[in-house]
Image (cartoon, rainbow, N blue to C red; front, top):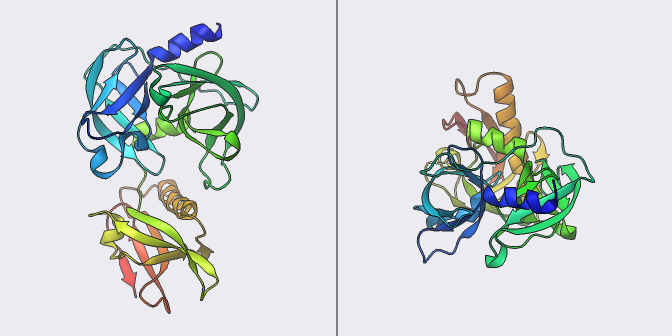
Length: 298
């Protein structure tokens, strides 16, 4: 099968995602994941806060447009699921075999207003990318632009190997692997603290921490009585140097709970060390990532 034929197949399963509110500018691409009308895209394509509220419009390859409600989103893994009110639509063919460096990579999306634009490159690596924690990525030397986010990254046969997400340093494009997408669709979003943070330098301690800038109502962070202005500094003897360190700690806590077969029966717990006020004394809190507070030590 030639590149042109593969490109045509990918265009049929690639959609344009827009917010139905014309005042909201969020837009990008998405993939028709199955014939039942499941659409997978990046969470950031849907916007944040009020920008993400309401219905989104999904435009198919033939120009038809449908409203699609958000069923779930996982900001940590930058994935979202929408549902079309239509069935029997063309859907993606998924790659199940391991992806290897050196393979041809093909991306289709809607960059800068160009519908169904195709670009090719080469798979550079599969696995964690420096500065982005332990999360696996399909890393490809391929040119992407705003509007490609949420679209498919495929192999030479047109089988989807990932969801294009961002352009990292060195011109390497990062895509969420198909296996990660499948896990998200099966189990839903991974638990998260529900905080917005920024890295700050702690001169007195000659280290860095994660300053809480905002807390989502009802989130595990709020239930654990964390406050805006608290500085998260580490867990289990390990210090946070980036937000990825916190994400890794959350993943470890959830994976341990799943391994012990207690998720849903008991709390997936995470002990976090933090500073408050004058930062003179280190505090700790044990947070239930499944929604129930266990205890707090001041």
